[in-house]
Image (cartoon, rainbow, N blue to C red; front, side, top):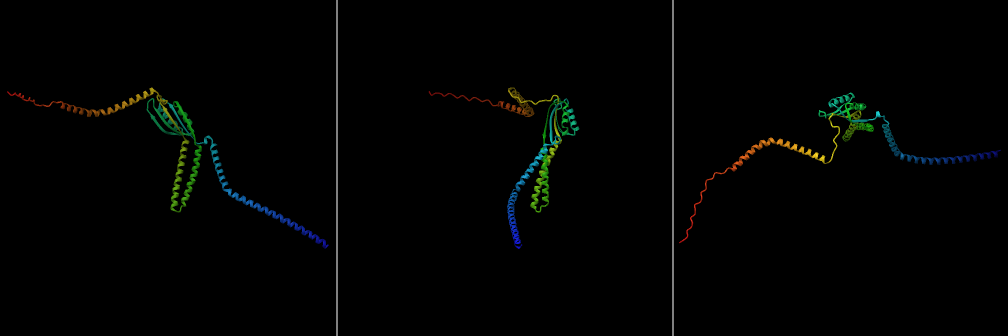
Length: 320
């Protein structure tokens, strides 16, 4: 029995030794794999850390591009009534009474909520012409144009539009950014501790505020042009010229131009002579009288006494 127990104990010991050896070998393999994994992980981490700034820059650029694309898409997807459009029109209407038509055009613009931006009149006869500049709200632009066309016989009409939606959106973004820069400069100025920093920050703040004021002025100008449309109306009398004279060339045209130049020159010469004639009369007549008197004095003969003849010289006698 003792011998059998000892044999069984020996087998158990051998089995336990084999199990321990196998366990140790497996642990070694696991540790080796983990070490390799750690090395590769550390290398990957280092590579990721090195590539992080580049990826961050690319991400920022992509985000900026996406934002710009979204803004552009948003501007492109706006409805017509949401877009910023500048309307301008020019028209010429022939009327029987220019002054009455001008008053009616002014009343039309006033009823639409607009006003007169300019008024120029030429002559008061049948060839009179009135140039009116009307500023009316953009929604009333088409209606005002049609009403003015009914004042007489419309001779021409030209309507132009300019879409400034993208420019308006860009100005809004620049104004927002510039306001943030101004606020930042003001905060830095409040924390300045030296005279040098104070002067430098004041100059920078002034420059930023000037840029902001310029952008806001542009925005107000665009807002004015989009809110109020401009209509330039020419009201012409029955005898006013409807078309401009075309440039002509040729002998007859040159002769006509030369004759006009001769007439103009002759008119100028006669005008100058007419202006000088009173002076010529006032100074020329006394001068002419004086010259006549002097000439007569030169022609008067001088009083000279009679000259006696010399005594005769006796002839010489010859010797006997």
